[in-house]
Amino acid sequence: LGLAQVQSFWPRVLTDVALRGASPSLAATMKGAKPRALIIGGQFTGTFCARDLKSKFYVTVVDAKEYFEYTPGVLRAYVKPCHLDALTFTLQPVLERSMGVKFIWGEVKTLNGAEKYAEIKPIFADTIDKVGFDYCVICAGCNFGPFKPMGESLWFPTVHEEARKISDWAH
Image (cartoon, rainbow, N blue to C red):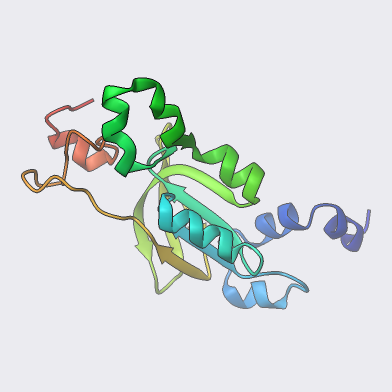
């Protein structure tokens, strides 16, 4: 197969592999290549940004949680536990299969804006992956626990590696 035939069958796969860690100038020289957008955070804002940017960008969403949670409805789930299914969903199938963007379940350890890359530690790995981007949108939200140094609360799991070390519920 020639390059044109491969691009017609697998344009996103080929472009993702070719551009991983590449400079934006290389991305611009590939015919038909879209810029890469990295979205940090996969809850409300991150999911909406991914949906809106996917037509013009190759979008990668990274989140330390594997699921979306409609937090305002959580109190109802305490009195009616079967309601939790209506408040949550796993991010990977929705983002990758339904929306057509890439999802990384991991934690951003370093964000280098000058060189346009992020170092991401996947949740179940001991290695750090370097992910290049042309644009980055930070939709990381906040934690609501005002009495703990890392914002920990009963309502939000401690997912970040450094926070787990000092958590009251260390794991």
